[in-house]
Structures are given as structure tokens and as C-alpha cells.
Amino acid sequence: MNSHIQVKNLNVFYGKSQALKNINLEIPRNQITVIMGPSGCGKTTLLKSFNRFIELDEMTRISGQVKVDEQDIYARDIDVTEVRKTIGLLSQRPYPLPMSIYENVAHGLRMHRMKKGKNEFDQAVQHYLQVAGLWDEVKDRLHEPATSLSIGQQQRLCLARGLAIEPEIILGDEPTSALDPISSQHIEKILMSLKKDYTIVVVTHILRQAKRLADYVIFMYLGEVVEAGTAQQIFEDPQMERTKGYLSGQF
Amino acid sequence: MYHNSTNNQQHTESQSEGRFSRPSIPSRINHERRARKVFFFITLTPIILLVGIIIALVIRTWPILEKYPLKELLLGTVWKPQKGLFGFFPFISGTLWVTLVGIIIAVPPCIFTAIYLSEYARQITRTIAKPLLDLLAAIPSVVYGVWGLVAIVPLIGNHISPFLGKYLGFIPLFSSENPTGYSILAGGIVLAVMIAPFIISIIFEVLSTVPKGVREANLALGATRWQTVHAVVLPKVIPGIGAGIVLGATRALGETMAVLMVAGNVVQVPVSIFDAAYPLPALIANNYGEMMSIPLYDAALMGAALLLLIVILLFNIISNLILKGILKRSWG
Ligand SMILES: Nc1ncnc2c1ncn2[C@@H]1O[C@H](COP(=O)(O)OP(=O)(O)OP(=O)(O)O)[C@@H](O)[C@H]1O
Ligand SMILES: [Mg+2]
Image 1 (cartoon, chains in turn cyan, orange):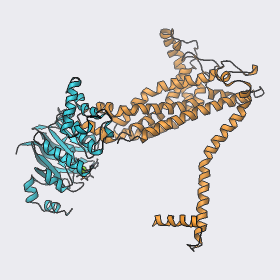
Image 2 (spheres, chains in turn cyan, brown):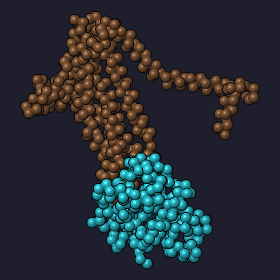
Image 3 (cartoon, chains in turn purple, orange):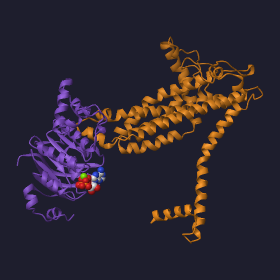
Image 4 (cartoon, protein in one colour):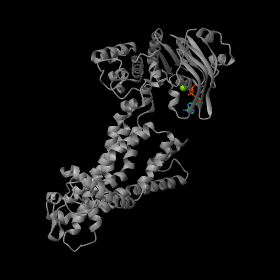
């Protein structure tokens, strides 16, 4: 397997309680990986350890390795802002920055000095809003505050904002759970169209969504990875009892 | 269940008895009505008190308001009660000076402290800082006054004033003809320390209305902590500072004891921060009860109290409005 992220012996503690237990994983490049499992099993924690959000909480301890393209992102000489630039995050509910729609997309470009001059910015903003399927809806109101958008639109704006800084990996923590069905479908479609260029890792509770999206599936339970494999393997021929149970709706 | 029973009570209240034969219900309703009335009046007491005070002050001030035009009282610079001259301007300007200097000194460090506490400090620092600030706010002002007398007044008299006078004395603001150290600056410094805990708390509170998710959204884009403060927190700081300043000013305007002890209390319109000042509260505190045989003196002091009360009420209302506006505005 051509893996983009490799996790080796990863342990995460919140204070004294262990949220992730000796995780070993590989996440395939340019595919959609879906992480599933019952509530509290550590899905969010795993995702947060991929972009080093785990260290925002003072109480956490982490050991083991998370390698992106063979480079351990927790190594001493690694710049955390570079890690997060490479690995974008789409959170559970949209949090637009307190600025205009336009500025939300331009903000990251400006922060990382990726574009110069109004023209380059305009083009980039338009491009990523188009990728996120939002351009037609907002092109006449680019300078209105981002909070004036609907929740579904806000989530697509957040996607455009994340894509604009040209990450290689996109993480999504139940990115559709706050959205209505139409907006959810929209996000799903965009994610599908993005996977040729990006490695995507999505947490979801919705089995049908997982089946629609997944190329690769990770099933977790109580802080451990129970089973991981291609969508076909996991959905059609799961090996472990817990996986079978979860898939048949026993949890 | 609970819902039902309240409904029933309302029914009996409007339809009188009859449907419910249990005799205890009407008496319970009466009881409840009475209790509600009592609570209502207890809650109303402060408002009644305030209105009462204002009315009393207006009545007692009336004689002087009748005799002199308001403009003359507010802008007159001569205060010679024996000769019937009641110019409040020295006291008004003294109050404004001390308050302004206090706020100018207090606000910048308060902004940094609040940002530090809300954005950078570890949880443990925050848990320690909060009660510490409350403690500072609870120290009696006479203690701050003593500190001002012992530490600040000599420091200004012996060092700051001669030094600044020497190099910046050509600017009226820093010229010094008062070698004592009892000055606007001394009052301002003491005030600044006294109002700092309030200003820090207010700004901190305003900053904590920024959802964690917004900060994380920016961090997820590869922003540094400072870039995040800059992009998502600072836009909120400005209204917070506004509220902080107004609230700080409210406290500073009315502060009596500490300022009275260090500001010098000379009746004059100050021009330099090293001049002595005589703020309104000090005027009232120092003179009420003395020389009351002088005609209209009583009315003049009551007028000072009324003026102070009105100004502080206004500031209070403004700061409340600002804060409510900020705290209510959600992030969408
Ligand atoms: N900040 C925290 N402090 C302490 N414990 C935490 C913290 N965050 C998560 N945990 C604990 O770690 C475990 C894993 O949590 P996590 O949020 O990763 O689960 P999850 O699989 O994402 O659940 P859900 O499906 O409900 O989102 C849980 O037992 C949770 O209680
Ligand atoms: Mg979660």
C-alpha cells in the first residue's frame, strides 16, 4: 500500500486516562479513509494527533510516532505550523473567522505569504470557492461577513479556506453532522471529487455515509484499532466480532 | 406533572374556586401572591432608594440652582463660599484629570494582562490569577491611599517630578511648580492600581466570548498563537477595552478616600500632571459638616454630590449597554 500517514505505537493520555492504546496504522494516499466506532472510542483523539491539535490541551501526553511521508511530525525540529499547513482540518461544525467571506479564504494565503497582489488573491479566492461549490452562491456578496451564510454554506466556506493553503491531507471530524441532508450530500460530493489530489481522513457515525465515501476503513473500539482494511474487506467480510456487531447496528 | 399543577393554579386564580374543592388551594395561592409581592418590593428597594436620593439631593441643591445659572456654577473657577462664589470647575476638572490619568496608566498593561491570561497562560495560572484579582479589588481604598502616601507621593516629589520637569518642563503638561508630590499623577497612579483588576476582568470576560472553535479554526490553518490572537481575538478586544474604560472610569470618578489622600486638594484648575487637584468626592468628604453656617454652602455640596451621582449613573449605564451588546452578539 502506498501510505501517506503511518502511525506507530501511538498512545495518548488525557491526564491519567488513556484514550488511544498502542495504535498502529497506515493511511493510504489519495483515498478516502473513514474512521468508525462507537462514541468515546477515540476517533477525534486520533484525528487530533494527526495535526498535533492534541497538544493544545495541557493535560495530554502522547508517545509513539505519526509519520507523514516518512517524516515524524512530532520530531523535535518540526515546525508545528508547517504540519498544520500540510494537514487541513474540517471540524464538526463550521467556525468561520470573524471577517468577510472573501477574507476567510484569503486569510490563510496571506498568513503563509502564498500570493501577491489583488489579482492573485482574487483568482485564488474564486478558484477555491468554486472547488467548494460555493462560488455561484456568494460571488455577489464576497465582502459580507462570513457569519451571514447558512451553516451548510459556512462549512463549504471552511473547506475552501482549508484548501486554499494547499494542504496534502484533509481531516474531517464528522464534517456533516451539523448539516442538513442536502448540505451533507454537497460536502460528500466535494470530498469524493477531491480525493484524486488529496489524502482524506473522515470520521463518521453514519454507516451509509461511510459506505458511500470509504475506500479504506478503520474500525476503533475503546481506544484501540479493532480492524482496518479496504472498504470491501470491512463492509463485506469483517473478521472481528466487534466489527460485525457494529456494522449490524448492535452498538 | 409540574407543568400541569401550575396550570391548575392559574385556572383557579382566574376562575375563582369551585372546580377544585380542596380548601388548601386558595390559601396556598394567597400565600404565593403575598410572597411574590414581598420579593417584588425587596427587589424594588434599591431603585426606590436611588430615586429617593436623587430627589432629596435635587431639593437640597435647589436654593443654589435658583440663585445662580447652571453654567456659572459648572464653569466658574472661583470657589469662595464666604463671598458667595461657587465655581465648581476646579473640582470638575480635578476629577476628570485624575480619572483620565488613572485610565491612561491602567489600560495598556491591563490589555496585555487580559490577553496573556486568556490566550497564553496555563490553566493553573488562570485559576490562581482570578481570585488574586478579586482580592486586589477587595482591598479597602484607604490601604491604597496609605500606599500612595508612603510610596508614590515621595517618588513623584523627589524623583519623577524633578526629572521630567527638567527635560520636559517646557511642555505645560509636565511643568512642575509643586515640589510636594501630592498631585494628579499620584492620584492617577493609585487609581490605576485600584481599577486595574476590574478592567482586566472585563476585557478577559469579553475575550472569553470568542469560541474555542474559532481559535482552533485559525490554528488549523497553520497560524501561530500570536497570529490567532491577532486575527480572531483582537477584533473583540476593542469593544472590550471600551467597556473596560467606561467601567474603570465609573469607579475612578467616584473613588474618594485614596485620591483624597494623595491628590493634594488645592482648589485650582490644574494644567500639569504634577499639579495638585481637588476632585469632587474629596470636596464633599472634606467639607460636609463644617462651616455650615455659610449661606448656600450646604446646597453647593449637595450639588456636587448630585453632579457626581448623575455622571456615575450615566457611565454605569453606558458600560452596561456596551457589555450587553458584546456578550450578546454571538459568533453565528
Ligand atoms: N479534553 C479531554 N480531556 C479528558 N478526556 C478526554 C478529552 N477529550 C476526550 N477525552 C476522552 O477520551 C476518550 C476518547 O474521546 P474522543 O473524543 O476521541 O472520542 P470519539 O470517538 O471522537 O467520540 P465521539 O464519537 O463521541 O465524538 C473518551 O473517553 C473521552 O472521554
Ligand atoms: Mg469525536
